[in-house]
Image 1 (tube, helix red, strand yellow):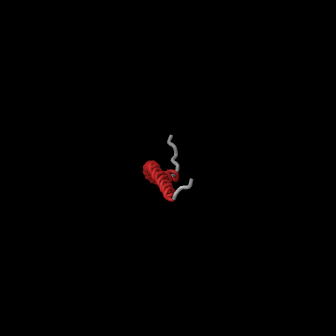
Image 2: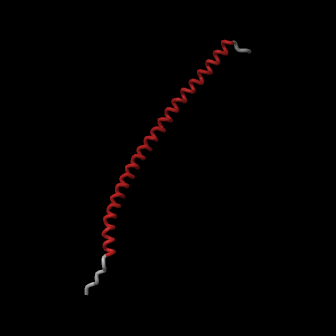
Image 3: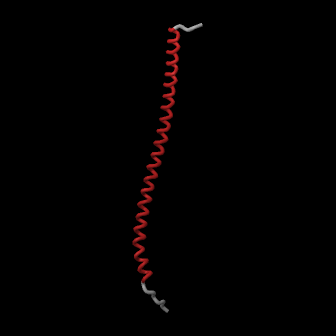
Length: 89
């Protein structure tokens, strides 16, 4: 039995409606996936910012330690080049 032109149009319309419905349903799934990905990115961003602050703090501490070493170095050189003292007694 052959379909009439009207039945073919109806089948085609139903096919398009089904594809559109499946497409819209998958959009909702993608929205949930994107929300999950965005949440994970936010968590990573927070961790990266914390790590950057820790690195900055460590850098400042290292700079202060280097300044102290530079101050001590002059005194060490003085002691190394000073003439030896003779022991008493």
